[in-house]
Amino acid sequence: KAGVTQTPRYLIKTRGQQVTLSCSPISGHRSVSWYQQTPGQGLQFLFEYFSETQRNKGNFPGRFSGRQFSNSRSEMNVSTLELGDSALYLCASSLVETGSGEQYFGPGTRLTVT
Amino acid sequence: QKEVEQNSGPLSVPEGAIASLNCTYSDRGSQSFFWYRQYSGKSPELIMSIYSNGDKEDGRFTAQLNKASQYVSLLIRDSQPSDSATYLCAVNPPSGGQNFVFGPGTRLSVLP
Image 1: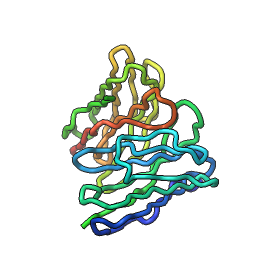
Image 2 (image 1 turned 30 degrees about the vertical axis):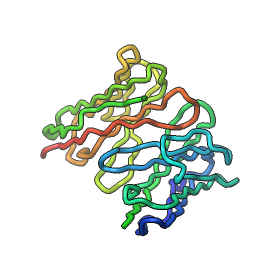
Image 3 (image 1 turned 60 degrees about the vertical axis):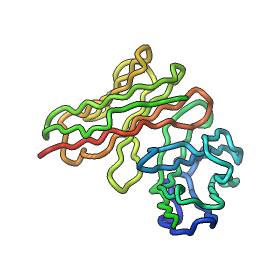
Image 4 (image 1 turned 135 degrees about the vertical axis):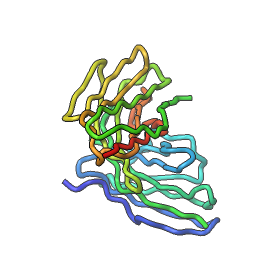
């Protein structure tokens, strides 16, 4: 079974621009979570989508948004990019529909904001 | 604020020794706990999940959970140089869904 895939793998943007990242979960997984990883803050939860609905949201500004499609693929968008948004953005999918279960990460998208 | 704490390391052990990694968490209602391994430049890879008090073994890895002490640990037996990585402890708060809180990670170095 194919793992979680993320595109693009690398991205360079300029301050003020916006960016859209894509994630395809493992086949059959309907929960998709997004995380931001930086050297200073570590791995931080952005949001989770399940059945096209945002189920949980982390403590990030409204510039960070996401959505999920009917095939469980998910996108996240960051508007008005800031230098501090430079990070590894990770997507994780889970088979569990209620309660808690294992999450599997994709390779990540490395975003650099200049 | 929900927190997960780990010693940042680096933790150095000789090849063949047991590596012991520790994690504490603040949300007493948490029920699900996970250990991930992350090699430099790569994404986290799931090693173990544990949901009940006690030990859970998988090959060279043993996870231990003590909910009363809010403590999770990971033991790696017969450590190999290929085990050198950062180990992340993750806790899923009882808020429903999948919104893991990660610790800062412990960097493990296994010396040949």
